[in-house]
Image (cartoon, rainbow, N blue to C red; front, side, top):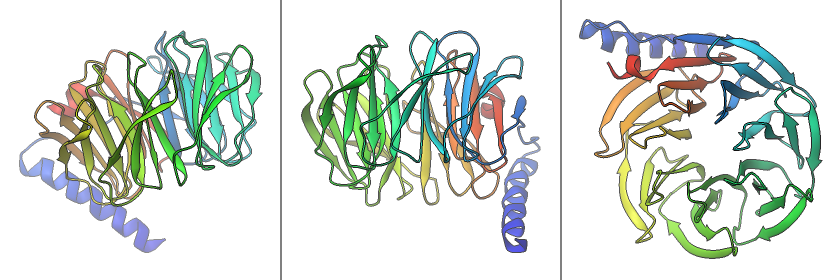
Length: 322
C-alpha cells in the first residue's frame, strides 16, 4: 500500500511540476459526481437531454444529470463489475453488461425492461444502431451478435474472431462496423450483410477500444501496446500512429465535430490530441489507474473521465486546452 501511494504521489508531483514550471495552474475538474463504491469502468452520455450513465466495479450503473450534478437513479442487478453501457439514439433506454453472459435493457427511470441472453461468455461491448432497432454486442466467446430489439432475440452472429472480442465501433452512417480484441486483428464488417470487409493487422498486443471519425474515413484503435493507431478505412491501411502513453490505453473518445481525440491509459494519463495533425494538445498525469475511461458530451464542451477514485470527473475542454 505504501509503495502504491508513493508512486501515485510522485506522478501527481511530476504533473504539477510541469505546470508550475510554466507558471500555469494545473486544470481541475469543473464538477465531480460521487456515489460509486469502486472504480469507474465505463461512461456514456445520452444523445438527448442531460443524462450521463456511469458503470463501476461495484456492479451498478448510476444515472446523472451531468449539468446539475444530480444523481437520478442507481441501476442494480448485475452480479459483477459493469463493463459496458450505451444509450439508445432516442435517449429513452440504455443497455448495460457486466462480467456475465447477459445484456440488460433499462429505461432512464432506472427500471429493468428485459434481458438478452445468447452469448456463451462475458459480454464486453454493446452499441445501438442509429435507428435504435438493433443492438450489437461483442463477447469473450469470440463472437459478435446483432439483436432484434423488437423481437428480443439474436438476429445474426459473426464468428471470424479467434479470441475474446473487447470492443466495437459503428460508423455514423451505419455502413461500417469495426471489432477488435485479444487476437490483435481489427476486423471491418458490413453490418447489413454480415460480410467481413477487411482485417487490419498492426497491434502487437490485444486491442482495447475503437472509434470512427464522423465521416467514417478513419478509425482509431488502442490497446495494451500503448500506441494509438489511425487506419484509413478506404485503403484499409495504417495511416499514422499517436505515441505518448506508457502501457495499456484503455479508452478513446472523439469529440462530436471530429477535431479532438481523448485517450485514457492505465498508467494514469489523460491526453487530448489534434485529429487533423496528430499533435498532442494536453496531457494530465494523475497516478496509476486514475483515468480508466473517457467520453465527450454531445456538445463537445465537456469531457467526462472515471477511474480508481470512484468518481466521475467532468472537465471543461477549454480548461484542458489552455
